[in-house]
Each structure stands twice: as C-alpha cells, then as structure tokens.
Image 1 (cartoon, chains in turn purple, red):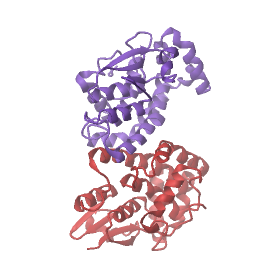
Image 2 (cartoon, one colour; image 1 turned 90 degrees about the vertical axis):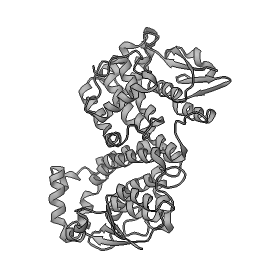
Image 3 (cartoon, one colour; image 1 turned 30 degrees about the vertical axis):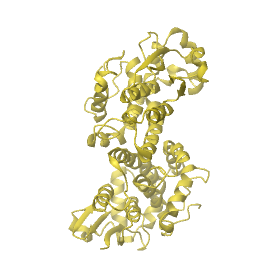
Image 4 (cartoon, chains in turn brown, purple; image 1 turned 90 degrees about the horizontal axis):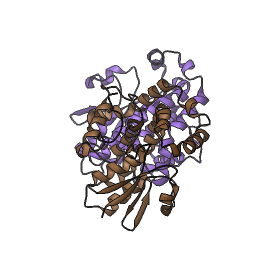
Length: 233
Length: 233
C-alpha cells in the first residue's frame, strides 16, 4: 500500500521546502517504499486534524498514523525490518539521536537566519500572515531584522559544520560507508535552503559540498530533481 | 603483559589532568586491560622520544607503540577483539568520530577558557614557561586575558552541551544503554577540569551532571578516586 505523506509546499505545489519532510522523503526511498507526497500549507490545519498535529511531517500507512521525523524513521525500521535499516543497533541510534539534536540546534538555527527572507517570499500567499506572526514572536524581531546579517549567518553556518568535515574526509557519509538516517537528518537542512534561496551555502572545496553532491545523486537523483535553485548558484 | 601509558601530570605525580589521557585510561578499563600510568610532564620530551611524539597519550603494548587517543582506542579494539568493544561497527564508529570532533571543537574549547588560570597554577614548575609561551602564542593573548570572562565561558560551555541533554534523558550513556567510546571521549573534558579547578561546571539538575556521576562510578569508582576537586564544589 502506498504511504501518504503530508509535505509542506510553497506558492507552487511542487516547491517542497520543509527540512523535516525531506528527512522523511529520503528515509522512505532508503527503505524502498512508495509514497504519495501531498502538498500541504501551514494554514491547512484541517487537512491533518485527524492526526492531532498542527505541523508536518505526518504519514499514514494503512491504518497507522505517525508524525515527527524521528518517530517516522523509527516506525519505518520497526514496521519494515526486512528492508534496509535506516540505523542499526542501540549505539548507532543513540549517537544519531545526538546528531539530530546537533543538526537542529547548530545547523537549522544557522540556516534559517541565512534564508529567512527568501523563504518568506516563496510561501503561499495564504501562509504569509501566519508565518510572519509566529516567527516574529519566536525571534522577538521582524523577519527582516532577524535575517539582516546574512554574511554573519553564513559564516556561523560554515563554522558550525566544522566537526563534520574530518568525518566526511574519512567516510562518504555521516553514517559511514553507506548513507543512513544521520545523513537524511542533516540533508534536510540543505534541501530547505535549496528550495527557496539562490544563496550559495557551501564552497565547492568544502567536504560538505562533496557530501551534498552524493546525497543529491542518491535514488537516481531524486532530491536533485526537486524544484529549487542549483547548488552552485 | 602490562600496557604502559605516559600520562600528563601536574605539580604532584598523581594529579593527572590530560583529557586525552583520560580517554585512554577509561578505554583501557573498559577493555579490562592492565596499565602502568607513568607520570609525564610537557617538558619531558626525551621520555617519549622513542615514539616520535612530543605529546601524550602514548602507549607501549609489548613491541607496539601507539599514540593519539583515537588511534589508541582503535588499536585496542583491533588487538583485543574478544574483550568488550569500545565501539561496534562502521556506522557507530563514524558517528563517534563526529562526536569526538564535536567534543574537541565545542566542549574542549569552552572548558579551557573556564579553567585556564587554575590549570596553569597546578602545573609542575618546570612546565610553566613552556605552557605559558605555547598557549599565549596559540590564543594570541595572555592566559589571564584568555580566561578573564569566566562566567561567559561557563555559559558558553553549558550552551554547547545542549544537543547532548535530550540524549541523556533517553539513555544513560552517549553510546546508548552501556558506556562506550563516545562517553570516554567526552568524559575526559570533565576530568580535565576536575583535576585542576574547583569551579562547578554543571548544575545538579543537568542531565549531563547525572551522566558524569555514572561515569565517575564506573570501574569501581576509578575516575572518582583520582586526585581532583569534588564535582559538587
């Protein structure tokens, strides 16, 4: 049966920018599972009310509803143990859980500051008031103030990636010789930016750039084909 | 055969403060291996000249010399595969390598700023000129200037630990249900501080505090018995 995923979209149905939905979409392909990716906007609360959630990702697999990218990944390995595992064993799972929190605190926090204004401009018109109000409340300033020092934010992002570089010199992926959940957790951040902003996050000589290329090539170039800006922009 | 470890000491032979040597000492106990921990000072270059190194940790196991805490851990799992592994499999190893770099960049960098002056005061007198000169060159300022904003450095350390807290709420150790290499990599930073400084790095309600207690209890309280300040100071 095809799994349904409610997936955040911008003004166009095919501009999919949610980092957490990207994690799930990559995880589904890693498992070799078919999915229907249903465009959803922040203000489409009714469409996912059945889940008790106000945010995506939400999936429905037959009779089962699961939300939150980490929980969805855990569900997929549990429900489909005979397909390639996203993460193997308690030690790797625990270290990946740390990696997830590092991504969210150190990488997402830097990326959002770089792309905030571009992101706002790509939103569906019906989402704009909600987005501006909720984010300005969270940031304690206007979107434009929050994103004013774009060069500073870009430097902060590149600095935050520092502990990852020696890893990607030794291995092709954050999860080792083959891509795994850790890679999808981080890759969402780059697809988030790529979907909405022409800014060049990484220099071509950065080991993280080469890793992103490998991620874009996975599953017959699935992520590369998504609507967004070229990474070399 | 007993493994020899050259282990950095302060003014007293039994004040052992090197974070990287602590990694190795914990790893040796995890493997259940006997070790002779030989006190060494920064200026005892001749004592380890045989290894081609100017810094510890250096170990000698029979005819084999190994240096660098990461390489020593890898050697121990390779040479003693039938004893408890420090890390299992390529995925966990790669994620632990990331964790190591996160510790060094985000945690060591914050700890050294908190403890620098206390550390200097605990050094053997013969090491002081070397330490001051080499570190002041590295920092581009005097030790006292580098350590002047201790409260700021402490806040930075506690902030840097943020991605670890949700992990230690879910699991007892960074490596999962049982302690592993990731735990020893991080724990060295806390033994470094505890050996030389009375400052309270963590509040008792911090999940990292409870984790450190568990680490201090391992191997019959091996690390807790080492010369240093009480962690509740």
